[in-house]
Length: 346
Image (tube, rainbow, N blue to C red; front, side):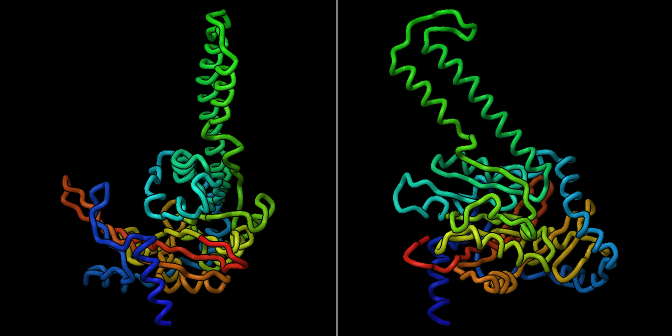
């Protein structure tokens, strides 16, 4: 047990950069295994909030979960979440999980939303093939439309370039004669569009019941990202998601997890009457959120056969200087591995 802990701390230092520092956006951040300490006022507020939402309403929320997320994306379109350019910085495995520099990496973004993580990854790393799925049909449609619009935009620009190389303008009138190698180069440029079906496959999926094997070959994925996804699922069904992912993940490869941690500011903002269970709440729009402890997450993954590599709380204090407001954010960032079968590595 002692050796295991030493290994965990070593990996923590190497992979998750265990430091206390200011981030690029000016927020103060630290990482470690200690949960956030509540103020007396915060502790009193949580202690008083013990009344749970009725069983009837909880069953209704579960039944209408997909509808509520669809309505969320209908209201907010693609504007609610910021693009997650921090992903490759925080999770070095997205770059390091290769045997050689240009090796194609296959990832699964489980719960892709409207592509806030997907698009930055495809943009930053041209050697990634991504599977991306989401519970919400509307969110999946948004991603597909965005891909189509980007490809169309690229195609128009490349067509203009190609016509120029062929000695014609975009109206088809002859301009100059192109050398054969120019034509080849133009065709090659057209193949290098960032977003094509050769680079990503997007599909709708309820991870708690739809078999991922219908869209992804078994043992074929190098990295699975679960970023702010599991918290939206009822705790009683979270293990079904992990079991589903396990089937498509290669032996020795990893799930990268980041989600809301215990005592995050969002947890403390819920009003009385929003509590569904321990660390589990419902928002006004009917979407739900669970706030994870390190121990709960460890047991959840362990029960489905995963091995924990590292797990830490990320505590951030965002400062709004204009309003003199300090907002304590808490996330749980972890890495779990599907056990080796032979000699694969992550």
